[in-house]
Image (cartoon, rainbow, N blue to C red; front, side):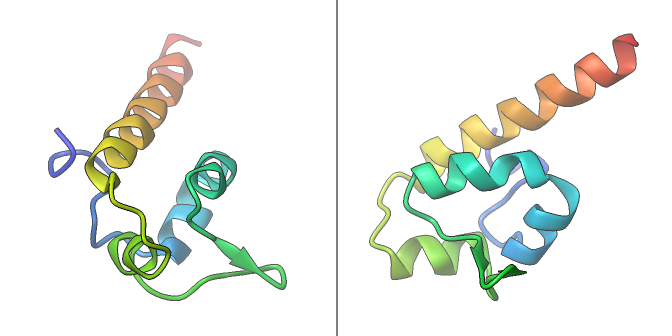
Length: 78
């Protein structure tokens, strides 16, 4: 699922912040910093997770993609 989702290990933090700002808080709760001094952090999700010692990236990707799919589903229902 995670590799087929909209958020992948190689998705940049900048892209996540721009397209899915609602994911900033969950990522920070997982220990992955997204914003520094009001600007997106450079690099991919996988790079930043590795730097922070995050081991459960697949689980995080699955949850993030579920959040994106739920948001899109609700948007289409309106």
